[in-house]
Length: 252
Length: 261
Ligand SMILES: Nc1ncnc2c1ncn2[C@@H]1O[C@H](COP(=O)(O)OP(=O)(O)OP(=O)(O)O)[C@@H](O)[C@H]1O
Ligand SMILES: [Mg+2]
Image 1 (cartoon, rainbow over the protein chains, first blue to last red):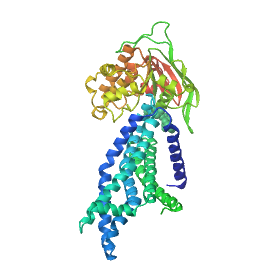
Image 2 (image 1 turned 30 degrees about the vertical axis):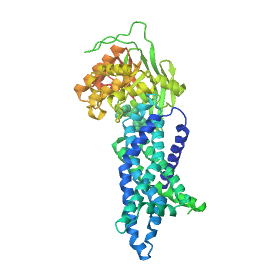
Image 3 (image 1 turned 90 degrees about the vertical axis):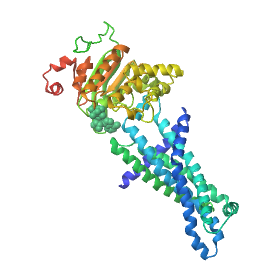
Image 4 (image 1 turned 120 degrees about the vertical axis):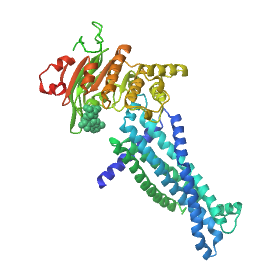
């Protein structure tokens, strides 16, 4: 992509996000649609998020075990895995899965609504399509991703506990105690807060791509595809930004 | 510009004498996208109870015209007056109230894929704050579906319907608001000839039953012949010729002949 159009696209997306703040907080509030979207967004990605969370915890534990054993530091596995999952792996993997599942489906859905004039039809039916379609979806992704991340973290940690028990035994209470002893407020809160930004970015990018998708069925596929690609990239960029900010605040 | 008297196959709805109230005026409207001048100084008037067909080639700006009328696009110049209101001057609320009186049948039907036929029909009703009790909603849905002859489809999804049925449902969705004006964007394009004629008859039936005025965009000559009280020929963004179907059919002008040959 040439630099110029990349800049133009970034600008357009930023103003799209700005429009979200301008229009989103003025009535008429689409509460019913927001709840419906939260349900759809959360429910759709639940199985994927659960499975990846489980595998993430299990693999981290099984892979780190031999190395840790070499140093006689097996008892540190819960702390290390806990920190890794909660600070980094949980948020980023959940966000990427979420982008793949929800970002693309929002892009495709709004894209096909644009192409088949459903968005215009809403506009002539007394409805602000930006509020009804975009604001509700962006809010839903922003609110649901943190919830899903917490869930994935929990499942991942439980999988780690199971992984530890495949050789040797720990009790769940001891494991939990170990994990919690290694975590501080500064580990948990920034990681939690950044998931809101990830969710917001996924929603805005998916909606932007779909809302302004090109004519034709090709445009719909493209909207879905580039929603995922751009959202994934932005998630990493935001993550980099987050680590800089927590660094400056002395939380790393 | 007067309503006229003969049409084959279908009875013409004669406007009552002296009652040629105009419901829609497009006055010297121009619309361009960058260097692409789509409409140039286009004018048109629609009287109550009459069907006017805008005839033009693909890409001549027919959809752009109809979207300017309903306020989805803003013209660069000129004035559009719908039911006595200047579209450009309306705020959101007034625009919505006006749109509740103007039905729009989209070229691609624009049925909401995620909703049942029933919810599709109720969407404009509810969104325009025209809330009714459940019993009344039921009756309105049933009536609208009966008008298009598809009573049994209320609980189906749009994906389960054929192209002709979808067109009818889209029409039912505009009828449920009892509009004064209906804008049809190529109602018969993409349908087989038999289904297309059924839609033509439906357009006439609606006109007679509810006394709606209609602006019909088309390049399907059979449709034009059946539904038009008057025809406006759109060429290069301008109103190139107008008159009844017969008047235009008898013109010798080569650009008019292109359509009627
Ligand atoms: N939103 C838009 N932005 C830029 N150009 C547009 C837009 N909408 C329409 N156009 C251009 O306006 C011209 C007329 O388009 P329009 O859709 O009105 O054609 P049409 O007469 O309805 O054709 P068809 O019979 O194929 O539906 C085309 O050249 C199209 O590229
Ligand atoms: Mg068109």
